Image (tube, rainbow, N blue to C red; front, side):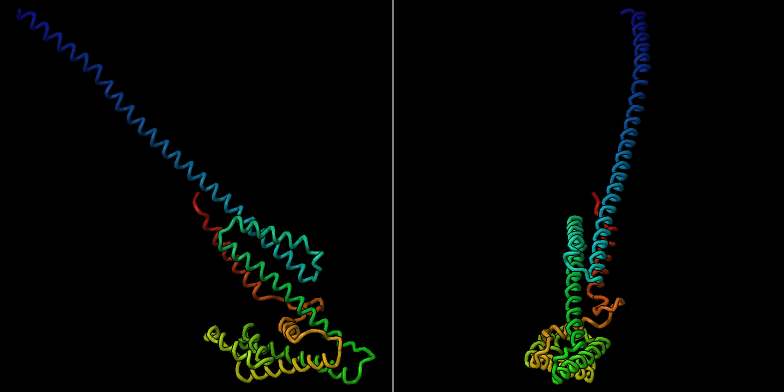
Length: 301
């Protein structure tokens, strides 16, 4: 091959290579730039999706928290309404709507949960019913005693004396209950001492069973316990005498003692009854605490 031809081919090849490089170079650069833009766009998209999910989660958390707050508040409102009915001593037939409202509010708490709040609401409901029953017992006992303050003209002197003894025995028992309560005579202890005064053998057996529970509790002093026992025995004897004397006093000893334990105070309206129920107050406080914890611990969606 002629040297001139070889030189021409070399020159042509060099020009072609230059053209190729000139074309491929920008293409490679463009691809690199496009890849970087794509990665940036993907990162932006991921960040946007994360932000959207976080915002959605926050919105849903707020909605869930508000829904629970409404349910818990509705339950407390229903409790207060029924509590007011009980304080005003409205008959059951007049408070049917309030009782149903409380049942519906508690059902909403069961749906919303969590279990700790639902359990606390159940305790509140149970203690509210116990308080209602206790007030009725206290009022019945007070009404029975009040009837003795208006003796029938047909009563004999013996019947009048028995009626007076019942009133005096109940006043003494009320003072004894207040004293032991101030010294740590809690409900279980009072029940045990009342049982012992009525039946020493049964009281002794019950005391052995319950003593382990009271090991770390403060108990009334021995002289206070003795005074309490004497007061209960006096009530027992007076109630038995009223039955023998055929007085219109039909309460049993248990009903009388429960009435004495529950009366304690007189309501501002003048009607006898208890002014509060500590187990209910404690149950309400436990519900509020459980509700606050639930409102600040909404699980992630």
